[in-house]
Image (cartoon, rainbow, N blue to C red; front, side, top):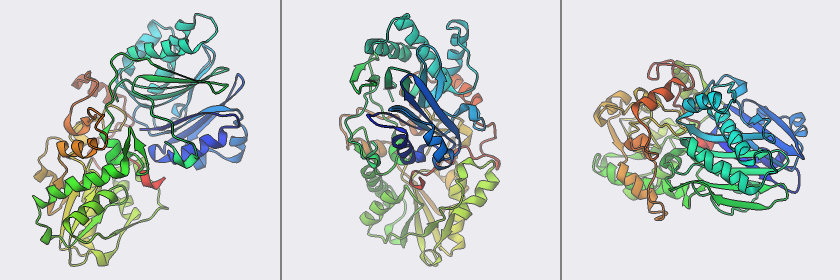
Length: 481
């Protein structure tokens, strides 16, 4: 779960990329990087931290050029504390390639061995992005064979990359002196910058833009299929985004409609005095649910935006304290009432437990909890940092057991089929979604328990995920950026 952007422009691109990264900040707050290209010269600056902290005036002045790319990092593999693993990554041959990517390569370890023994390339970090840039560089070198680069060479190299790597990946890369290429895996819009949206890049497709602005496209994969990650619509994406023809905001409204039906079957509406969202991304679902049930919608939590994000904190005990630092209750909305709290999803349950307790301390008579997403029961291996089943509160537990853990008087989850139908009807051309963290079905069809165990070994941090010293699944909130 990172954010990437690439730009080719008649004028300087450093400010354009910076502005785009601010819009993508919700997708990663661990590190940021920008690389620009002026002729054949590559300029790069990257470091740990937020975009506004990584880039100062002196850094921006040192990024000239009319082509470039940027990335904000949310670490899912490798060493989160290492600045060496901030993106983009650079290799000097062939041509000079700089690459940034969002996703997770499920066969990264096998590729490392191939790169060393067969391709004679060295990997110096634990980042799968470094693996990817070296695979792309090797395939581009094989394709060009020392001859001048053509768009067909780029597409042939991308096609060979698709054959070698597994997992999820969206890629932007600069080829020094030539142009920018973008491509995505075969399976799985920035209005704020003032640009016009043209179209989505199709699964398996590559787009190559040379330095004169000429655009070349080609489908580079065999049997591609569109299977968007459904968790994007549930939580990860900004509400003003449109992804694969689906409005994220409308998707969340639809989830509220289907969740309302689940609530009615569990708690009679006349036993609920008020519906309160847990800020921020649950608001559309909570508003729609309240309207359909005829129950007042109220804001019961006030967010302190000047407190550090909890997802980067080193221990769960600190995270527990930080939840109370970040959220304050409006006591009058809770006191003496039966409240229905609505969240976008429940992943590990520690935050939900704390929030339920806060509602009780504010005077709520009863506290019901509803999740706009189904129970998160399975590891996600395509780029969201939840690679172990043990850290998921719903894994191997019944809804009643989860209810007891979080301390709610009732717990209502979205239904998996209902979730897929609610979002899928917004674009009937999408045949299916990747909902693996909910249903355990991995769309690439090549994930087994051994793969998950191997990925877990390479994950960021080695904490026991359900102990008090772990914060791995406190994913940053899209509305905080």
